[in-house]
Length: 156
Image (cartoon, rainbow, N blue to C red; front, side, top):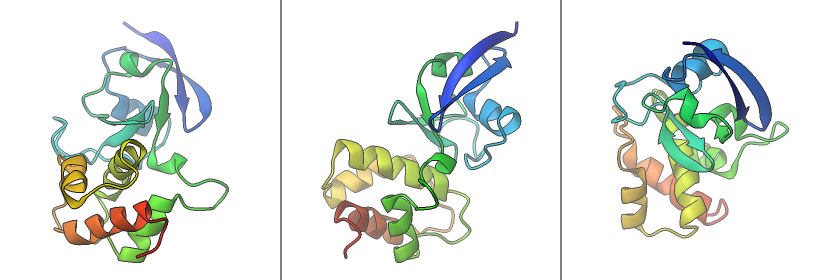
């Protein structure tokens, strides 16, 4: 069954025709051409597909498009404003918090969600807030430093 859905994606209203049980990830990538969210495990365990739904980090591979209708969806493509990177993106660059980069969009969006809830997180809060985002290159230390840098307004 195909339905029409209005999605607010990165601040723009987008109408999609889709089965309501289709994943948000497949709609973002295949229908809207937003490929920043990655397919990883397909089970919501690795975090590669993380997007923000009304500001909260969700795994788009297990979120149905019907559940996202009428909510604000933010992807990695929507963080930068007028060619200026988001502070978390800047912090990830400054700390060299990436190697292959596959997990980075999900990591950045999880960090944004964490910092919106806890602006000055402790190491433990960063660990818990980023739990569920897997980096096969093991750049966790640099990612933690990037979250701390972003929390301090870009300062080390």
